[in-house]
Each structure stands twice: as structure tokens, then as C-alpha cells.
Amino acid sequence: MLDVIVIGTGISGSFVARELAKFDLNVMVLEKNNDISNETTMANSAIIHSGYDPVPGTNKAKYNVEGSRMYEQVCKELECEYKRVGSLTVAVDDEQVQTLYELEKRSVINDVPVSILTRDEALAMEPNLADATKAVLLAESAAIIYPWEVAIALMENAMDNGVTLKLNQEVIGIKKLDSGYKVITTNESFEAKLVINCAGVFADKIHNMIAKKTFEITPRRGQYFVLDTTVGNLVNHVIFPCPSTKGKGVLVTPTTHGNLLVGPTSEVIADKNGIQTTMDGLQYVREHANTIVKNIPYHKVIRSFAGLRPSSDLHDFIIEEAKDAKGFIDVAGIESPGLASAPAIAKEVIRLVKSRIELVNKVKFNPNRKAYTTFAHLNLEEKKEIIKKDKMYGQIICRCETVTEGEIVDCIRRNAGATTIKGVKKRVRPGMGRCQGGFCEPLVVEILARELGIDPMEVKYDSVGSNIFVEETKFNQEQIKELKAKGE
Ligand SMILES: Cc1cc2nc3c(=O)[nH]c(=O)nc-3n(C[C@H](O)[C@H](O)[C@H](O)COP(=O)(O)OP(=O)(O)OC[C@H]3O[C@@H](n4cnc5c(N)ncnc54)[C@H](O)[C@@H]3O)c2cc1C
Image 1: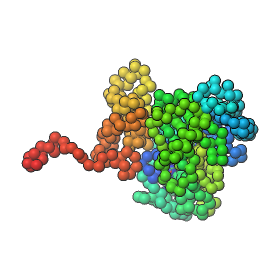
Image 2: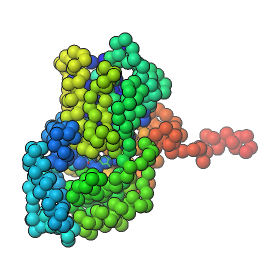
Image 3: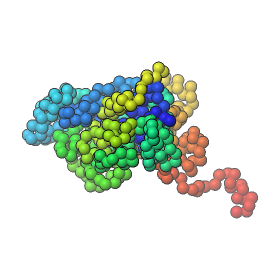
Image 4: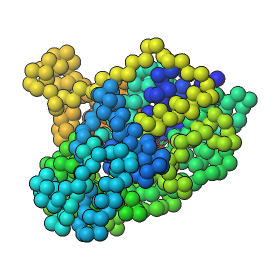
């Protein structure tokens, strides 16, 4: 019997897995998709909120403030992008200026330093703020990350330290045993003393498999535009509108890789897989973004996408053991600021685990993980050096982002490695540039097939069924000879 099963590999499950890896435990992570963090953690604003705005006394406030203070160190250990760019919340009328003063009061209770700047001070920092800007609230501790990079790095590090990851394992049932639980997936079953439910928008479904219904998760969709890196410096901070009952509103922010991100909407929907963008949604994003930032060059949009906030009817994070299922721990309702809160939430999960089983520190836990080499960031000497060591770094596969074969092979061969085109794209970025994979995708297919020892026909873009090729359209030389010999 395992000690712990974690369900889900979003930012919550990945942080929990890595925290558990610090102890002498037998831990398994189950994920229904064929890659890590392919749901909400892959589609959000990527902001480590400073924590001044959640309502004081809520779980959101507690874990956001704690989590944002932990991120920089974790990102250092895992060699992940972390940029403390700061955030500006823009007031464009007198009522909103009052809201800024209310937020300032809240920041004192949450113990997060902020300051209110005049219009002139704000425009000196960000000349593209809307003309209507009256005042802004500056939170210097807000940061941006590359969310799935952090989740993948956490899981890689957890696996380097002994955690087992099982992909393509959708949990479809949980049964109570005398000393734990039997977790049944579409293809196998596993037994463990404790189960941690980190299943995002499906966390209520998982909870209801073993415990009485106590909450419901409704997806709240957010749609975005991604703009080309040539306009990534239109703003240098995260630019928020004044928050409303619908949430933080449509923001404009640079990304860690120099793009500009504009969004999201906030739409309550019924479909837990409803990640499509819509004309109306994207139009809403444009109209609202233009109220806080001017001159957004929408002709530079290279992609749009949507993510689903797992909003619970309890309106706060649920991090607790189910009352009627001892040893079954929910990490549910993790909507924004869930990304920012994840390191602190994982620590809370460890406290709950500790109340059920003895935790002994793993003597050989290694907190460090090496980043992939980013060829584009090397100087000429370093480039020559790495190509001398490994010829694959001399082969450029993605021209937009200058990604080499060496980087792609590295991201496939590691623990928690890529097995799909999107998996490679998420890890080392071929296809993230202006052409969105038009040139490099066939080459990535070839590399994946070779490295995984599979036929190119089996290579998938993303989830099951997303095969790139349907059938062969040309014959190779051998086949032509055979056909000729047969007189065909
Ligand atoms: C539009 C938007 C903007 C946001 N912006 C921010 C932000 O800027 N800052 C911030 O702090 N937060 C933000 N958030 C919130 C943040 O993205 C989430 O809180 C966080 O990603 C949730 O992570 P998770 O691991 O709990 O869930 P997920 O990332 O959804 O992971 C759940 C995992 O469980 C798996 N799973 C589900 N069911 C099963 C099953 N039956 N069997 C096995 N596996 C299963 C899924 O496949 C998935 O991998 C935003 C969210 C959205 C949608």
C-alpha cells in the first residue's frame, strides 16, 4: 500500500507532490491527461499577486500572502523564471480613486506594502496608461512566472526525489478500505493510506466519489489575447483595472518571455471542458483593456486562449480533510489567486498529512533542478562550447524562438518529460513564436518519434486522439520499388 496518492498535476498537485517528496513516503501522482498541467494551470494570467486585495481573514488572503513570499526561493531552486515586475491598479474616475484607498486599508491588514501614486507619477512609470488615469495603486511585490514551467519543474524535482507519476490515469472511483483508500482509474487501481484531491474544476466530482457533497465547483472562463514579443514592452508592470464583484477584471501584462498578455473575461459556464474562445468574449477583452491602457496593437495578436477558474460555491479555497472520509484531503475551489498561493497551500497539506501519518525527513532530498539550456540566451563562446559537446545544439528547429534540437531532446528525456508536440512547446517553446509552429512542427514530430521509439503516425499534438497524421500520402523508395516490381 502506498502512503499517499495525489490526484492532479496542476500547480496545486505539483507543489503538494514536491513537498511530500521531502519525506520518507511512498507517493504516487495520478493525472488523467497525457501531460502535466494541461488544464487551469496552463491558461491564466501567470501573476504572483502580492496579496493586498483578498478579503482579510479568508484562506485566499492567508495563502496568497504566504505563497507570494515563498515563490522567489522555489523558483531559484528549480531554475524557473520569476520576475518581480510590480503591479499598478488604475483608477479612472473619482469613485475608483476611493476604491484604491479602500484597497490600501486592506493591504495594511493583509500586511502587504502598497502605495498610491498620482496620475503624473504613474504616467512617468507607464506612459501607455489610459488618458483617463486619475491615480494608481502600486504593489511592488507582484511578480510574473511561467506557470506550467514551474509545475513541470516541481514534478520533475519530485520524481528526481522518488515520487512516481502516472499519466493517462483518470480517476473514476474511490473505495474506502480498512486502513486507507482504493483509487480506481480507467485502466488500473492503487491503494494508499491518504488521498489528496487536487483535481481543479473536477475536484467536486472526486470529492463526491468518497464523501458527502459539501461544495460544488463551477467553471468561470477567462479568455485572452497573446501579442507578439515586438510589443511586449508596451507596459512594464502588471496593469489591473479597479477590481469589481466579477473579480480582478481585464488586465494587461508583460509575460516572462516578452509577450504581452491581455485578458481575461469572467464568464460562468456549464461545461467543465469549455475552453474555447468566442468573438464576444474577445471583443469584451478589447473594450475593457482599452480603458486602462492605450495603443494596444491588436494587429500583433499571435494567439488567443481560454482557461477555467475552478470557482466553488463556498467562495474560498477549501483545504481540509473531508469530515466523513478521514485521510481524504481536498484542495478545491482553487481559483485566483491559486497560482500565487500554491506553495503555502502545499505546506498546509503537509500539516494535514502529518496529523494522520508520521513524517520523517528524507535525508537525501535534493531541492535543486537544472533548467533546460536556452541556446538563444548563450553568448557566442557558450554556443560554440555546447555545440562542441553536443552537435544537436547546432541544429535550429524553431526559427522564431531559436530553439535547438538539443533543448527538445533534453525536455523529452528528463523525468516528467514531454511526449507530445504541445508538451515540447510548453517546455522549450518551439511553436510559441509568430509562426505558431508552422515551420518547426514537422521537425518536432520527427524528434518525438525518434526519441519515444514510436511511429510518426502515433505522435500527438496534445491529448488522446490529436494525432498529427491521418495516413501516409507518399511512398518511400523501398515501397516504390515493391510497387513497380508488382507492376502497379
Ligand atoms: C483566467 C484565469 C486567470 C487566472 N489568473 C491567475 C493569476 O494571475 N494568479 C493566480 O495566482 N491565479 C490565477 N488563476 C488561478 C490559477 O490558475 C488556479 O488557481 C490554478 O492554476 C489551479 O491549479 P490546480 O492545480 O488546483 O488545478 P488544475 O491546474 O486545473 O489541475 C487539476 C489537475 O487535475 C487533473 N484531474 C482532474 N480530474 C482528474 C481525474 N478524474 N483523474 C486524474 N486527474 C484529474 C486535471 O487533468 C489537471 O491536470 C487564474 C485562473 C484562470 C482560469
